[in-house]
Image (cartoon, rainbow, N blue to C red):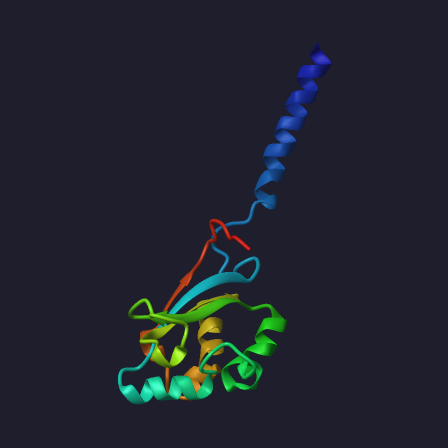
Length: 151
């Protein structure tokens, strides 16, 4: 019995003295791993912006898909694994799937990055930013903790 108490005291004091060196503090400025960020990026106002958007993306998801600037620019990002999800934000539910009739409001994306600054850097390189479609100054970027994802 005395040996058990002595061992318990020994192990208890050992674990208490060792524990602080094993615990990470919240003072770390860089995340432990890349984190998902949700990005809500409005389009700039004006009818010419809608025309620019349609110019760099295919009008419908068909055979022209891979030949559009928008989707060909996405190929490396999909292979790198940092683009998780993306699509157009619409002002209204469309009557059909003809993108020429969509009332675009902007885009939404989920990206994998180490920081908000890295997300902004990636968004600056997107064809929609380069073509003058997105209003990057009004973009909303938030760290995103996924609750669930269906296939």
